[in-house]
Amino acid sequence: MANRNDRLPENVAGAYYVDSTCIDCDMCRSTAPSFFRRNDEIGFSITYRQPATSKEIADAEEARLGCPTESIGNDGYKAQ
Image 1 (cartoon, rainbow, N blue to C red):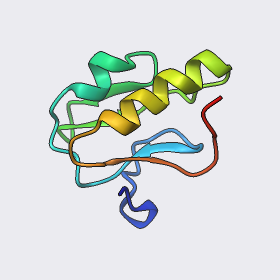
Image 2 (cartoon, rainbow, N blue to C red):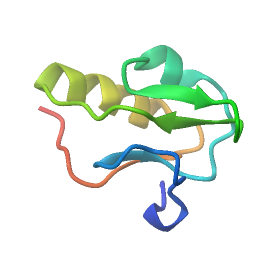
Image 3 (cartoon, rainbow, N blue to C red):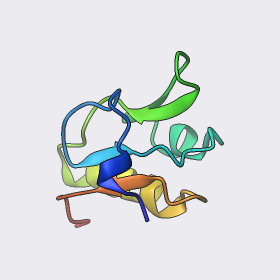
């Protein structure tokens, strides 16, 4: 489970974030590229845009639930 205390500072502000346990596997970037991308400076995925619509939230949730290291956190949005 992602830990908000280990949230990478490169994430955009909001409910979804990637923490420092990311292994840069590309799963979130391939599942929800509208919200997750690789930060080459740190070598990990980050959240660069927060979902806004029900469809976008569902896409971000799919990435969160599929993360093999559970490095994606959601501190607010509920899947619809």
